[in-house]
Image (cartoon, rainbow, N blue to C red; front, side, top):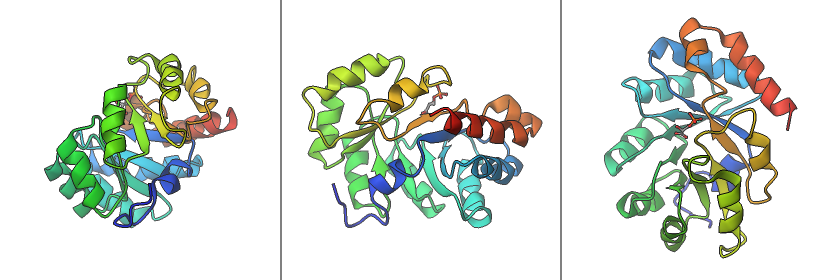
Length: 214
Ligand code: 3PG
């Protein structure tokens, strides 16, 4: 769908990087070096989850300091968080599920939203509201590639998915091989122990390795 309220179209986000890091930032001082490490590794679409106290501040800071990155908010659960994420400068929004009120608000907001879905009924709800670019979450726990292939039968051919949840270096290529998948998301690319240790080179290396093996 083309949504004229949105500053970017969903394909601009989905097609920019095959691997999207799902980032959990516990300390604000980690935000910029982490974003720079990811960009240095060739990944410039960043999902910052609103699971930590400093997440909104981290979005603001990364937008200011790392202009090469396209910065989005993940784990957006309700309209209040949607507004906070947009106010912080998020350039896209990812939700874990498909609440109708939130999805309706997303169509009116200024940036693209990617609703989380795990069932055909949730996909149908998202489609009714005009969404065709969806997060498949939690991917592995919901049956992974097998489930996505089963979804493909009855669904319109122009739906695109970004699977996340349980994606790892072992299985990410299996998802990217499917022709209705543009990108996958995962936290393995920005592991919490590397962030905590300030091991930015390791994170850059994980990005390079993931991209090189596609
Ligand atoms: C998400 O929000 O997309 C997931 O929590 C990421 O899942 P992972 O930690 O299994 O990659």
